[in-house]
Length: 118
Image (tube, rainbow, N blue to C red; front, side, top):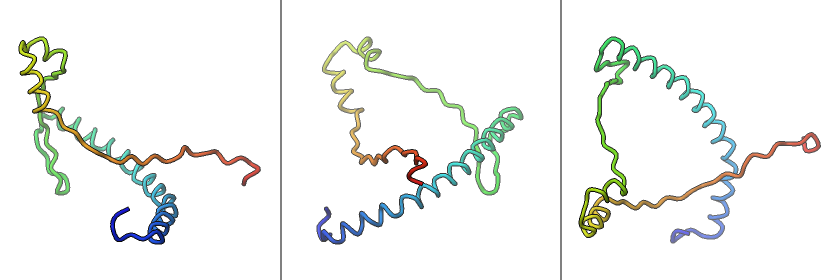
């Protein structure tokens, strides 16, 4: 618990969190539907731009730009084939590795409500 949070405040926070789960789920469902429709529209915009060789288009203040990128995949096995010195390989790992920390929040799986519980 952060400094300055009492046990009572913590219990109130937990209760408020639980009470708002249903509200958040409803909003997420609306957003999911909205995003699905927008994604289809985006695909059509992109397709039209590609078919008509349009590289940039302003739509309602939002700029859509087609960009071609070339990337090269490098994995440790491939890199080991080209780097002879193991110390260089270790140095590369240290220089290009990142470590992040996150907190996972897992909701319990939804249970079906049986007819007896309704």
